[in-house]
Length: 98
Image (tube, rainbow, N blue to C red):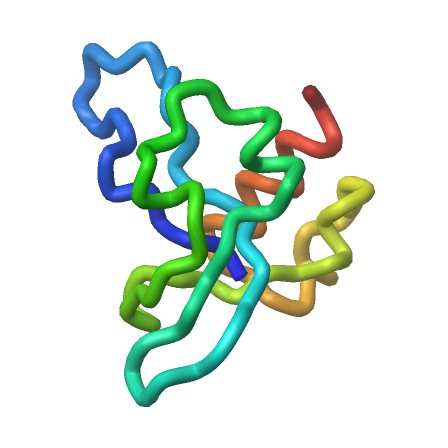
């Protein structure tokens, strides 16, 4: 699952140094909350990860987006993505062009 980074730069003067979404591993589902943990790759890649994100924690389902394995290699035709949301689109573009 993707976890929305609520501390992300969102103003026009942003240098886009913060990621808008983090890739996480889904743990337990607790009603309207899910237990998530950042993947090892995210923890290694992201500088300045807030301490509260470094350990598994419970988050509201509203703060997440579904993850698509199709985008891991960079999907050519984004219409084919099975979980089409802003997080998968950005993740797909980053994997294709960065």
